[in-house]
Length: 343
Image 1 (tube, rainbow, N blue to C red):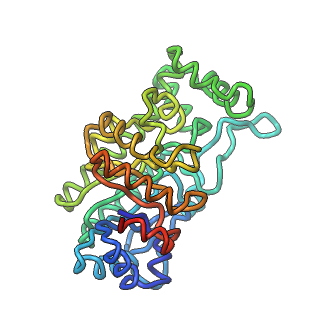
Image 2 (cartoon, rainbow, N blue to C red; image 1 turned 45 degrees about the horizontal axis):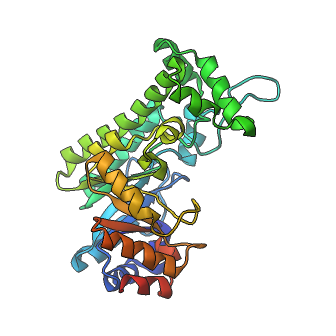
């Protein structure tokens, strides 16, 4: 499989992209149809900001299906600039305070609070519509997490913490210490590992927000297009033997997300994490054990990873008889990299 920007299909044309995929014997295209900017690349009466011009999803489906290539709609969860612009009350807030000691402050112009009810409903309506109107082979969730432990500390979460008996200010201060004091960057995770009741309850609260959205997406997909698959791109730390970092920062649990999905894709970009090229196979093996479902290893196909690294990563997956891979990304694939797939 391969991750493809919607803009690439728009610029190169769906036929050219599909032909390239077929030549490389790629069987699945994960095409971005709603990214961090919030603009959508398919026909929708629900979308807040549709991209004008080419219906990327429709055109790619028409080009890929006759060639036996599956197409999944790739949807970004944790960011949407257009939604935040229209609904500033649903923006994510960081653990930091403003210079006057007020806050917490807005996280960024694109980050949405994962618990924001309007946004969650909007995304589900968006996905239900595309699964109804297009013969997609699946939905692929990306950014289905918190960006880090620094968010979200909005008033909505303050109220949720109070209802759950969590000391909101204690949690915020612990997060701020880890984020803003380099010598204490592990402070928050250590509190979690030590069993701090407030931190543990906060981590569980955030995790359920992510888990519940994955479950709700699985339910709507089963109801609208039962044969389609649900998958998710996950941060690789969740496959570690000790997954406290992933739970505290991202609220991603391979066990629960993996069970709700048909397969998961750890973004095991070896060079970006200063790991050897065979690392994606290690991550995939642990992820399969933890999730109990198939895993496609996310492979780094962009610099500084080299074509030789790509060949080594794919060879290790094959040697260990692992289910498959997803290349990130189509745009970064050169003729030298494509050649590695033929070996």
